[in-house]
Length: 282
Image (cartoon, rainbow, N blue to C red; front, side, top):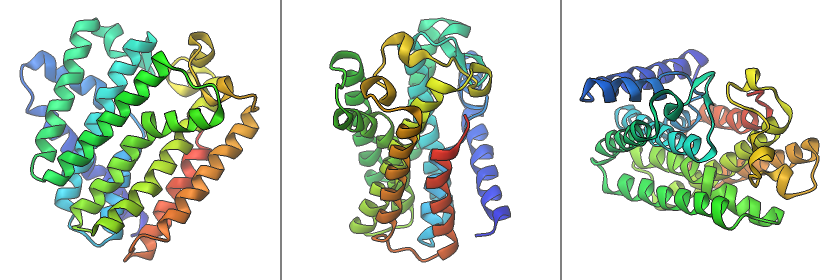
């Protein structure tokens, strides 16, 4: 898949995202959902969905629907995260609760979830996949708030729930869109969950080392809130934590060996994605 083809896929995701949100009523809710979702973002999760589907030579129409759906779920979770963390910034602008208040922000999150599940409704397996991911995400949020991890192993379990779950769902949705068998769906799910854990570890390192302007959100919040980031839970230095992220990335690449890939170029992009999440600067 040439780079221009990948860019075209991302453009289609963005266009469909805008189209889905454009149909939301009332207008005030639509504006709030658009502000949350269209204000930027790396679009890592929906990119995983379309890459996996393409790697299996699947049809893109359903994959684009699922890709937009998982991005809406992700953004809904960010709205809640910012409320919990009392974060005033998101992607260089005001977070939803800061801009509109807690009530409207929660309604915005609910609206995003509703639109997402309307996209998954065409496939029972997709609904089941995302529902399981949300359960794991909720478990992760509860663990972070109530029973904070105290060891590296507990931290990795938390990261697998809090971040890895939606990454896994994104990949599994791509495989489901391509009508893949259960073993292939599972292999891609393992790949993406490891990528998600690597992403979270790198996020923790950036929070500890980068400035707010570069991140587009407040830095140093993990330490300020006593949040169980890898550098707070363990005695690892940022450099050592980055090495842990690379270990997770390598595990993700090993999982790809078990997937029934039909496109070597798509595999290259999936490999590059696993590398990107541990080298990104924001």
